[in-house]
Each structure stands twice: as structure tokens, then as C-alpha cells.
Image (cartoon, rainbow, N blue to C red; front, side):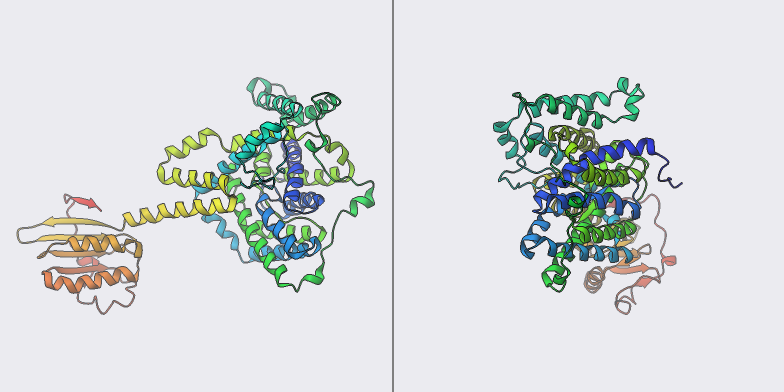
Length: 541
């Protein structure tokens, strides 16, 4: 049953407000890390929350500027020499994404292993925790939203934790501690009994408390500096607000560098979106499935609009999506509300938002990070076996130590390695029987036999002793690769010198890849094969 957009406003409105509070500093931080105008991050947040949400099929996903694109954006702006030229590449990227959606390229999103997706969620959770601790202590050298291991301030994720000790702000630390207490209490059952806690979300209480404490600390040793506050660009009037939007310079559309950058942004943004869609669907309590092709089209439209009005590239983003889900968002109304709030606040109340301490927001994100990387998730993956646990852990470590997309790539390689390893271990079953006159061997091939099975099958064929009968049973096999058929053909020739009577049975529909004539004298019908006695010893190799 489809959800009406406004059928769950009592859940979606508070969730949208929480996502809005989390999104604003992230939009600003990503713009700062990207070397772009700060307001371009706000524009991308508006577009992701309004335009993408309207056309998206995701009920709980939230879109906006992505940290994973920050390095590409930074290099792109520097190489092209002007932000207005960079915006042309964003428009091109959006058009390409829309075309990819029309061509149904979104199916790629269904091929990411579950262990890798869960590793991505846990890895991002760990990064959020590590990155927000310095902000909680009042040290903000690394911009909000930066998920990279190596930071712009010359530190890395771990060294920053040591470096922050020299820059502790007592006021910020106290606000973060009080905020954490509020958030933890808000999750307790005895607090949830009060109806007001079901209407007002803990993060909103944290933000209001943070503003009041920051005002109370003014002029004391606990005073919070302006650098430790949200910092939205302030326009004096509506005209000044409109002037913060930037138009692309389409005279640069013939530049090859613009097209290369546009294609790069389209590919990376699409991959990040598809990964986040998979992860968000796993977090969704209702386990709804997002139509990935529709999502690519929505992201494409979003990037076209963002590029046309001066915004950064947008993707679906897991931090804001998980905050939405954890705050009780039920439909895409929450994401839409968050986008509208960004627009209204940037236009009408930027000065009020600029009174929010980053320490309060750090506490909110620390809770989000913990819920993504709960110890219970690690225990669950460990209990699932090493073929699930190792790709999961490798993905987590690689994401924390390098970055999101590289970490996912490394995790995928490890997961594929175990898939191939399992495929290699199950190419066939060997059976051995005896009668008064001769020993009989039978190799029952699996449904799919590829070059990965070549070495094991060859090894087993070489073990077959002289003076026996050997049946290669491919009656249930639907595909045999040429490499395997080649070693069977070679064995057929050597069997003549070992007095091995070789037979092979297969279905009429099996493609023998040109070996039909060569195998003609050894092929027999599956119907003529004597059924193996149930008492035979069956050994898996």
C-alpha cells in the first residue's frame, strides 16, 4: 500500500526538523571542504531536499551535497579556474545521470553484497564518531561533513584526536556533555511515557539547550567563539539573498575538461547514490525497496537544477538518511520538509541558526554514528561466518582509513574473492563403485562449470587409476566453459593409453563449444546411465 505524502506528518515533521538541523552544518562544511562558496552547499541542500525528493521513489532517503565528491569538486574548480564554469559540469553530470536512469543502469545497485553494504554503514558510523569528537571538544579545524582520512588541516582522522587536546573549549565540551545526556535520556522508556517526548524530538531539545547555554556563557571563561557556531551566509534583504545564487557560464560548454569532469561527477555521484539507496533500504524499518532507475533520474534532475542556480552536486547521503530514519521519518515528506526548512531559514532566519553551537550538533551526530556502528552489528556479522565477517571488517577499515568509494571497492574485491573461492570448491562430486570385474568412477558436474574449476577437475582426472570405467555426468549441467571441455578432451586422448573407458552424458541443450564432433564417440544419453545405488559412498571434493 502506497503512503500518502502527508499521512504521517506527526512523525515526518519532527524527523524533517532533525534532519534539517543536521544537514545545515554538513552542507556548509562540504562546501568549505570543496573550495566552493558556502552558499553553494545550502543551495544543494535545498535542491536535494525539494527537487530530488519530489521525483524520487525513496521514502526515507535524503539527498544533498556529498562528502565523497568534495575532492573531485575541489580539483574541478581549481582546474577550470572559475566556479561558474564548474557549474556547467554539474549540469552535464545531471543530464548524464538522467540518461543512465532511462537506460535502466540503476540495476547495478542490486549487485552489492550485503556484507559490504553493512560494512559501509558501520564504517560511516565509525567515521562520524571519530570526526565529531573534536567538534564536541570545541576544536573545528576540520570542516563538518569531511569523511576523508587525510584532512585539509594537515592532520588525519586519528592524529586529530590527539591534536584536539591542545585546543579544548570548556564551554563547548560542557554543551556536548549536556547534549549527550539529553539524547540518552530521551531514548529511555520512562521518558517516552510522557506524550511531549513523542512530539518533540531529543535533537530539537539539544539544539535549543545549546543556544541558551551559549548565550548564558557569553563573557565568561566558558564563552563559545563564533568559529564554533553554525555559519550560514547572511543576506541583508531579499535582493541580497537572490544575489547569492550563481548562474553557470555556458560559453565554456565546448571545453573538453568540462565534459570529462561532468562524466566523472555523474559516475561517482551515481555510484554513491546507488550505494546509499541499498544501505537506506536496509535501515528502513518497513523494508521498502527504492526503484533505482527512478532514483537516478531524480538525482539527474536535481543536479541539473543545482548546477543552473549555483549549487554543488547532489547525491543521496547516508548520514542524513540514517538521521531521518532514526528520528522516525516514515515517508518522503520528512525529506521534503527538511529541504523547505533549509530554504526558509537561509532566507529569513540565518542569524538565529548561526547561534547553534557545533558541539550540540556533534552530540546528535555521535548518536547517529553509534546507531550505525553498534557493537551488536559486529557480533551479528561475526556469527554469520568468516565469508561474511571478513568482507564486512575489511570494508569498515578501508572506509575509515581511505575513503567511502575506495573502501567499498576493496570490500567488493574481498567479497568477490570468497564467492569465487566457494565456486571453485564445488565444481563436482566424485563417486566410486565396485563390481566383480571392474571399478567404476563417476564425476557429477555442477550446474555451472567455469575456468575457475579447471585446476580442481584436472587434478581429480589425473587421480583416476588405470583400467577403470569413468563417467563424466553433465546431465544437470547448463553451462561448461571451453577451458573445461578442453581438458576433458585432452583426458579423452590420454585415457586410451591407460585403458580407461571414458563416457560422458549431457542434455541435448548443453553447448559443447565446438567439441561435439570430438566427443561423439564418448557421449551417451542420460536415460541410458544406470542410477547410482543409494548405498554408494559419496565424497565431495
